[in-house]
Length: 324
Image (cartoon, rainbow, N blue to C red; front, side, top):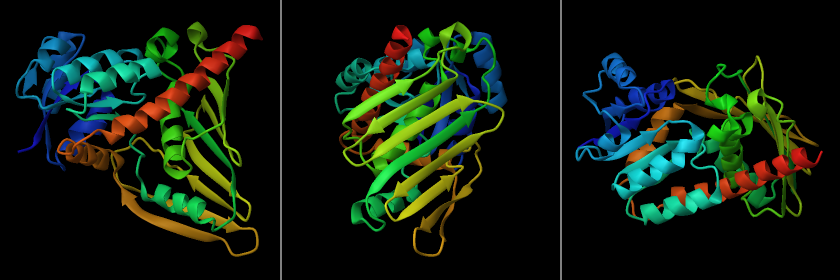
């Protein structure tokens, strides 16, 4: 039997991450609810969704819904994820899963190991991460000294939640989960120091550019993220004896895309390591469906470590701004 999914939020991202991939996985989108009932009905007609619920609470009360996908504004993720877990539904939540460590702790208590909770970081667990992890652990190119990440997203639609800090808007919250998950998979998150910097000069004091930094005893990682005309997503790993570069690690499309790691040794020939094309959203949904039959909730534990660092970095940037 397919996993029956309800959508909390009638959003464009749900179309890419749930509706298109469901046809190719053991999942079925049964129901949708939105803050506007008319919009929910229009959305259901557009995508052929059978059931429209008048509220999020009504959707959670649907006994035929096994799991929910939450794609509301960031500050609402925690509230509805907790309510879904209490209702006994598995939960997949758009990134960031929560905004604070306290919110994650409440969600862990609500889930109580009985339901799966997943942060929708579509780039997670790609084969390139395993390759870089082996470079680090085996010392193939010496000690990893730095990881430099750049991300640029398009300017958000004016007036949306991304223009409102109180709703969890800002470029850092858009990018942090991708960055932190990549570091978690390749270096680990046992850091010694964190910092954040932003002018917070966007609408309503939201961040449109952000510099985040993490330190380990031998390694420093930075994230430079901003809004702009070109979509950018790249990592540069700098070892004692080589650089390893990955471009376009995130492209928000449904199609399967290839990736290449470019390894440039200090004293050897450049090598390109190619990976087979992967449809990120299809694999993310398939992994979530598979997780619902597992015991424990490692995905939530991993996300909790990321959220704790994200909160600390953002708070440091706010402190710096307040004292500047």
